[in-house]
Length: 579
Image (cartoon, rainbow, N blue to C red; front, side):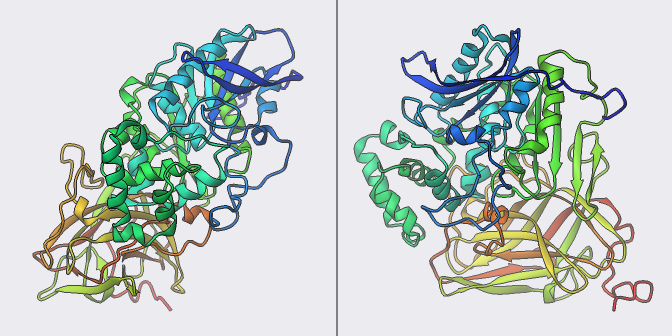
């Protein structure tokens, strides 16, 4: 809430910068830190940035662009400025905060081995916070700031309950590494992690979980089994990692491959929300489909303390994420300095609505008053609210290394503006000539000229179709991913596929398009690149989608405005004379 009394801590201090500060850990190793603090009478509250990236780049005096302006490049090439996510240290220090940047163990100049969100990484975060609180320049009130890795590690560390950690400001955060980024719907997405681990981590010395915790025979047998997997063998980066499992950052990719189901490895890398009690400012942007967007809504549903959420336009933040400076400063002023600045007044959710070029404030998520509406798949690529005609049947397509077909279903032309805000789901009845299917589904906004723009995605490996019934809702099916149940060829099965939320106004004259494919689309830019890079089916598979009275395949959409009379197969003529 903004008003005439709105203000933040003023720019009042020069800044002292201390480099190569050693932060001792309880097991004898030390972490490397850089401390920016106000040059004045203290003590002051502190803000922690905790990360595995290059230390110097977090505070380099450079002008940088956003996340990246190009599609992800191949391993060994730069990913622009993707890891500059700590925020502007000078900005906070000039306004009365100590900004402390700490390299995670096994990265940069910190000692030890990197464990990729392992338990020791969390314990180190706890100990770093308590070390900061004991310094003479700190008043004992500590928050955490940053996006992406900086954001997600906040919630992991907060679950250890450091006594002096008072609040989090961490939008753009995955909180379940298996589901949010590594195995979308049970389908391995490896390319982002391959590129990230090579180009972004700062001199990582990686400890392989499976190498460390499994028996030698078990580990070597699992490596051999993966090398014989056709889906893995078709990807050179994965084969190279398996053949050189201890080289560079390969242990990260090897551990991901050797743990294809939800198990203890992934449970250790899941945020324990029940243990987080402090205030949290969370959020994401609509473009982060393949990495951080799911964690945003999980956090909103499960965090029990005071919270706010922002859902931003599908454009990543410019470095060093200065777009969040004043909002975060108000947050820290309130929770670390005790300033009653009104930041907790008014609705807690800000939602950017694509197609309107603006935000609006809401009381909760999903939005109160959402009307979930079924749109049924029909023959000839139609999708609408009407149930099935007599003798409607099925559509068959091919998915093989030689031909990757896709299906597209579009609504009639919309005769009124229709707002779709929230989570969606797709129920499919399908069969295949092989024992598995890789489903890649997406929603698109198609304009009057037939040009389509992707809005959101969903994924499911057919053999992971089992549901966690007690956690699932019609608009958010939840899959346990603890085992594979292969298909009987040509048997018809029901598949419930989560589609990540969107916030979009479809103008009259546009159409909603559902696409069903069986491998990745080619990304147009780096934001779309976050949601691709999956393994592909390697068999000659014939997939059939059924849409008849006995097999009512349908899309469930969250409608928040419009669609009062529904869509018109006639196009609404003559009222809506679409040329």
